[in-house]
Image (cartoon, rainbow, N blue to C red):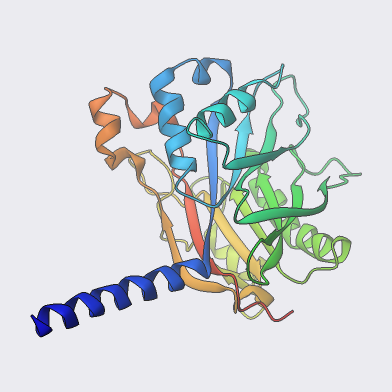
Length: 283
């Protein structure tokens, strides 16, 4: 009887320790939704899977919203919050040189994050980006973690040029928000025929930036392995990153097969993610 009591107390202790450890960590993700508009949100099963994916993270940077009347994001948020309001969102302006314009968005769990200041679209006087990066500062509700996110979807054919400008955008974000911690994430098209990975270490030297998504990651649904989607942070964020990162392979979800969906029905990109500490930010 005494052994059983001790075992019960040990289990309670370990469970409590797990909860405490989990409370000082938050998950950040990036997800290119691939032509996200009325056609995709009208498919109930597809919308449900996307909403379920988003709910696995505390904050998600979204790319490739294509919807002229801008209602698709509202439909998505209704699906995300179907069981009760838990997430809020910030959406940027429609961007692009052609009629096929896109929007960025941030979707975040209100009990975990709050936005700070005003979101900003990079002022691109020279028209160097097809879709100018979208900037927003976030702070955790608990703990002392704060940082600026830079959300980007490069034009594939101009990926080399646009990626080469991202360090400048990150420096601008740091100055504008008076915040040294800056995390640039999104669909960089940073691999394959669009970009030479050897340039990555030149543009983002490892003594100045942390590379969260490495060159050997596979972030697309295609059979060929490519690390199109990336996260890179200023070196000041090294203390905040737990070292955990990953690619969410929704093609392996049983629910996708059960519903008769193909992975590309959801997107041609997998979400990428990282885990940050909420209590180790010293700047």
